Length: 559
Image 1 (cartoon, helix red, strand yellow):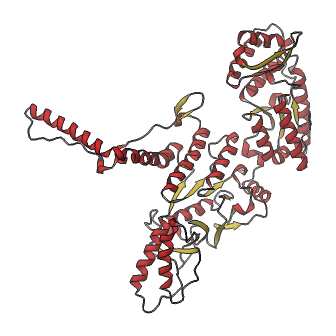
Image 2 (cartoon, rainbow, N blue to C red):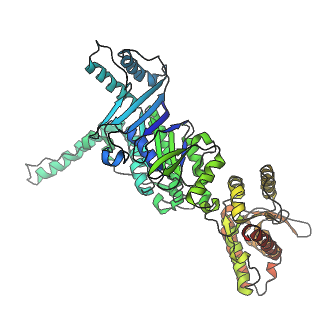
Image 3 (tube, one colour):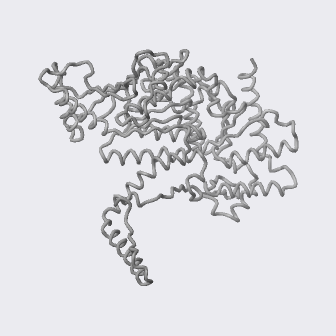
């Protein structure tokens, strides 16, 4: 059973019909602050938790503020498979209820459920709100059958709301850990008898010890709380391992958030095993994320949407679905939420920019001048050398001194990021790219040239990007004698190393896990050097970067 559509009316800021369709691949909800995005999620949550009125609907707070005599209405249409073992029980009850009608509806896989709230805040669910029942049918019998069908249907869904206001630790404790406890307890259930016998043995030992010491009116008893293994398990340590294994809350917020989203997939799988359809309502998944992780996390959400119904609000273009049918827009008309229908993806992301009064590049915290590099050591090394030159000659590189080097986490990440954003950011900020002159760098340069050519964008060598040289990585710009010394002393730092018959370095590659140590080696060499001859290969690179940034600055900012 899946949700096919949901329609909201007279709920908080949402007065007019607000309908969401096409949920198979997740729904992005976009719009400015205070435009009602959160109210859309809250309405969906209210629908799936209304049976027990978990969030205590309140007419004063939840009914649209200027309504008099009206009702909040949330209507959902579901679609299932009558022949599926997991859906047969519902359709059996639903069909019985349908037959109670004076004019039964045609048999269909689609089912519509209506939720309204009475003036006292009580929820009222109905499958056939405007239809009459057969005269001979007792109202009590129809009511019982409707309650039965309702209970079966809603119990097929588990709805989880993830607010942006909660900490990741709180969400891990409330979402992941309970499912871990349940999963582990199911394994331990097989040992329940052995555990109880051991507890009896321990209790007897304590009692015997009391008796031996003339305390004869006390009897010890140890037992599993409520005879539930799950209640016996207090908690688990959730650790993440990169260079070091530590508790998840000791990692950066980006990694914490990414790990939480990854955990949602496992939770969904566990719920699916129990024949539950999961609904995830997520506020601003980009919160606390570094832009480098946007692509990863969006990919997690899209994969999650294959097995669950996922709705998320966002202010980031990186989290907007590419299919315009999977984007819902909101805007505020006074204090009321209005639904916006976008004609295209571009229309949707432009709407975000306009509504927030920001440029596309603001979402990535880009500076005035940006230089994209492949990795962290590239960024740190280049920044160190530019600052070194500045200390010697402050006026040499006016533009380069102001530039920010951005670590993209690998050459493939540069390609993905620029394909997704370059058409926007290149018009708003100075952006240049540094690529290694190896096969991977050349391949990415070719791919980006082809992509940009198809989209009428400029991506020209020595204008928008530079290659460091034939088979040259950043480390290859240092003097050959330093590289040879490094290899002589630490050949294990290299994944490959080649010299000609004349002892000239042909090519080499540094292992990823040794780049930090290599970086420190070169910095030590710089600090001990008595002259600046080691800059010989860097200067042409920096001169070209200065020229490129200057030209782009004039084009973008010289209005």
